Length: 514
Image (cartoon, rainbow, N blue to C red; front, side, top):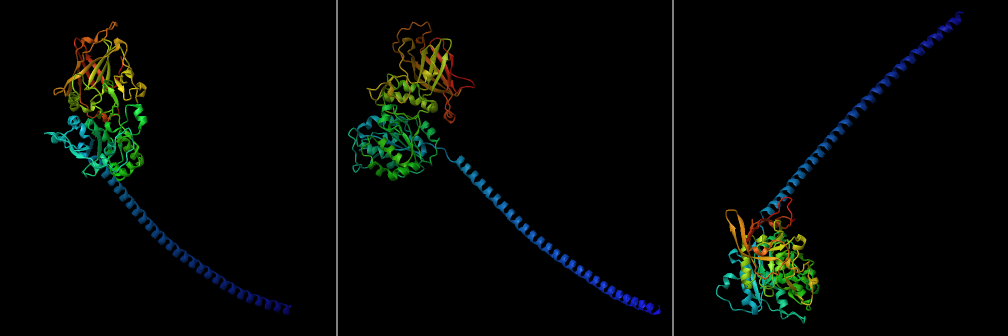
């Protein structure tokens, strides 16, 4: 038992020693693991903090850089926007400040011949305004004798350049067409300053210059423009071109287009030796330049014969700019010469050029009459009621340019002269016009043209009892700044031998109806 006990005690001691050694090893291992964990944790924390700090710094730098970039971009954008706004405002201001086109910006080129100069220079004197510093050249085929005072009332006279080197092969025409077609180019070469438009016309063309200026102010003179109108004759337009501005009726060419034309015109003319006139040569060159005709109805070629009354009394709703072929047609007022008639027209032209020849239509309900006023020219009184659609169509008081052609050969609608004796109009022509300073209105008088009237069986008041018509109209220089519309007229009184009519802008809801 003792030995056994000793053995057990010995084993106990050994196990205790082993436990002690094992415990110390475990504690050391645990300590090692703890320190290792702490070191790893510390290292991780330090590394993480450094990484976070680095990213933070970098993000801050990036943000700061981006902010700077965005801020700079915003500043640049703001500066750019302000700069653009300044440019736009400057351009708008310059446009507003830019002087409107006036007579001083226009140079006229007038085609004339020495043979007809003594007679036709009187037409030019009617509209030429040297006191307004108008500029222009009359281009002649050869020198002419000048009379005393002509230099003060006419444009400068020049002789056209030699055109013998150009071929002309049209058997029905005259080679002077080549000379006339080069007038715009020759006028340009004179080097006049501050020119916006070159305006072409013949020596038998009368211009309403105020209305010409109104028309040209609609267009940008810095662009290519070729402005004019066609012939009244459908056959003329077919033979020549509906795309051609007829030179006698006048046309306008902007300065940049005139420069382009001058550079190529002589070569262009050589390519068209078979053409008839100057204006179709001009249009041929315009076609090569790719510039179309811009049509304005106020330029009148008047390729007609006889009496212009029907055309003038129903003028289109457009400013009257030119009258041509004045030697071919009858005087526009009866019982006077052509020049005297046109001189009478200059009176209302000065009072209210915008309203010259403009038609108004109204009705005298008490008498059952239709009234047509062509302001500054004539008044017509018709028995009965005629619609505005009828009255605004020109009556055929004129003959076609080709006398074998009938009324279908016009390039516009016309109406026949009334066959019913009761529908023949009573015509009152302008006799005087003046400005009433108290009412700031024009007062124009129209006196009846006394011609025999056939008997009428209608039981209506006879307009033959009326001797004169008095028309009141306020000048309206801005008439063509608005959309085109016919003026309205109102019969104020029609008793006895006189009728009083008021003409002006149509009121709200006002129209031509019975």
